[in-house]
Image 1 (cartoon, rainbow, N blue to C red):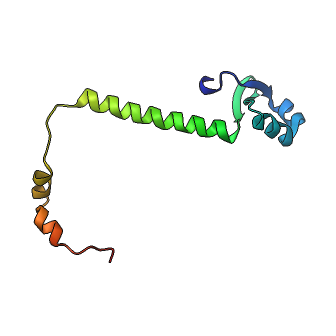
Image 2: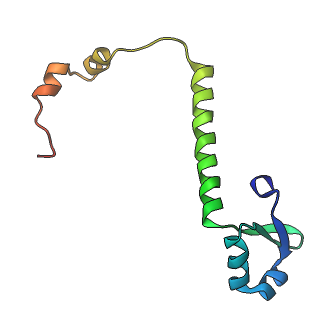
Image 3: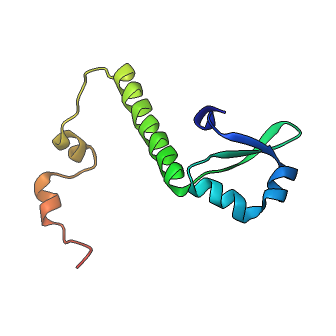
Length: 103
């Protein structure tokens, strides 16, 4: 189960008998639970702290994937800001002269 390898498994029937209050109490005490139906995981009950850790890990992995993709595809070629502005018909001066829309 990946991020929930240490989770305790229980069936939907067992979870129903345990009740929402019991499942929440387990999660509050740091126990991760995986609810199964016909021996297949269908839901997980974790504390908000653990959910935040999992979300942070997922964000870190996305950032790492982006860094690796950029490293693998980097040609070393760079484009200056002035060249980009020129491609869109602007210069630094023309941008500076443009009124700010947020006034």
